[in-house]
Length: 487
Image (cartoon, rainbow, N blue to C red; front, side):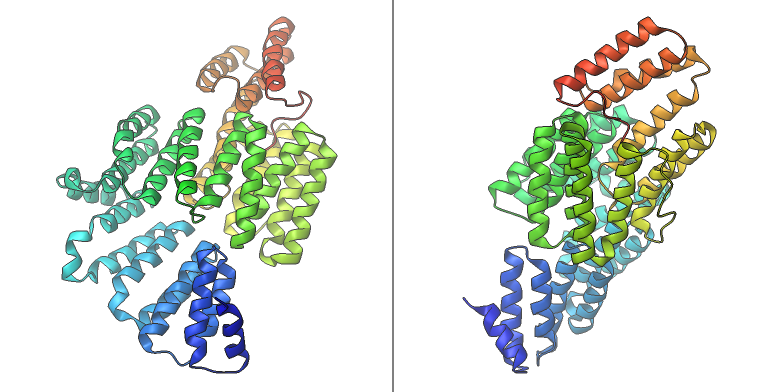
């Protein structure tokens, strides 16, 4: 009942035998309530003690799990490698976990190598349980761009997949849908996803069912079926809530918040941003904590006033400086984003480059905003492709960036073709038909297109389009004067 106090006592008293037992117990208790940073502290105390090789390996694996959960990937890998040293009999399972970490990092070729290692070390008694690992290998091949390897792996699974578990069948169909999206066949991808919804309902494990619904939503987001995507995200959230799991909560709440924000449901977005902030505060994931607070800053800027939003942004920078030095640069970039979009679009950059891979897409976006403000459209169109490539290769960047990549790509196209109003109209009509009704993203395009029409002297048509944009914005309780091209 008081494992934490007892662990502290034995740690301070240098009792190397007792600290193993109570350090692990305190770590397990912290992990149960998702206080992973606390758990790591206790587990590290435990491995300092006199533990058997097997126990030491078991604790190092737990340390790796907790580091993974708070987003410290390098530390997770190091802990898992230590676990293999002490528990070689679990080599295959832990190597698979290392592969998972590299997938989170976006290093797909390295992930595939670790999955192949795991496959080579599977004990014969577990050969029948290989399907999930083989599916992960196919996913790594797909995301690394090795379509030949991907096709071969999928072909090997095709003949038996119908006899596998519902989760494995859904996973296989998701991979097919991702491959279709990679080829630009979004309609086929959407149809493929919708065809497997009944199978998702058959998944018994609630966590895996929630995971499947989450992946379904991600594909629908990319096909711009935002309302449907939000529905499946909320279903996944309800499942996790029902089983009282905080394991995936903050990621779900964060994505629901950003999607609701994009659609224009500020009340729902604010509720889920606040929930994300609460979950991440418990877990100690400062990246998502800062991101959720930035969402609240944007809502305040658009629904209350810009100065209130700016105060939120300053709080973000302060929190980073006081609690998470690794994320200070991230917080400062978000502050620049806010200033360029809401305060001064011509502001010179304070931070010009970064070595942090996770932040590079943000820097590219910031650069695009400035190029647009300077009317350098040809350069913009070239650099949009750079951003697209970065987003495809980085699974752990902010969840809202893909929406705005699409927005910038199409919006810049409209801006760049102002000299050809007929072509601009064709592009606009094609884009607007794909936009969900009465959503913020639709209002963005309507208002931008009104500016195109006005610049060509067609004031009557411009007023009509702008009137519709303002109607949507007012229905969403968004100030029509706010620059909606912000992130």
